[in-house]
Structure formats: C-alpha cells, structure tokens
Length: 64
Image (cartoon, rainbow, N blue to C red; front, side, top):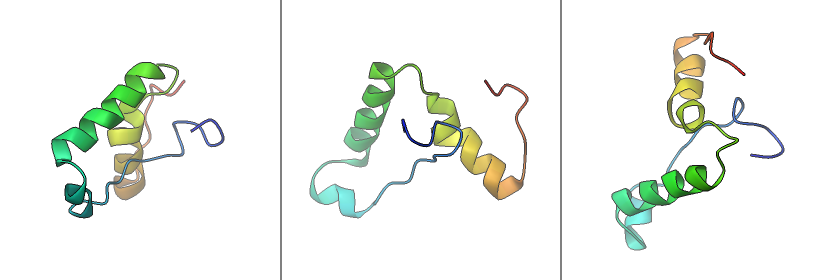
C-alpha cells in the first residue's frame, strides 16, 4: 500500500480457499483491522470505490 497508494489497490480474497484457515468473516475482520491500524489509507477506496471505478469506469470527486 505504501508503494502504490490506496487509489491503485483493490481488495480481492482467495475465497473459498481462505476457509481452510478461517471463516470469510474472520478474513474480512483482519482486513478491517489493518485499515483501522493504518488510517492514512482509505478502506472505502480499496474495498469499493477503486473496483467500481475500474469496472464501471467511474471517477470519484472525493479523491484526496
């Protein structure tokens, strides 16, 4: 994240393979916990806005 920034990263899981180690909810809690510990990055961008922007070709006016 430090190298690319939160505007060039989007979340993807290895579901259902992650179920071998934890539930999907546990994996997502880990991601949320990371963002809570790194508030300089936008969880909304990584989990939602970036993917929507790429797949639906949308721009967001609230870019930092």
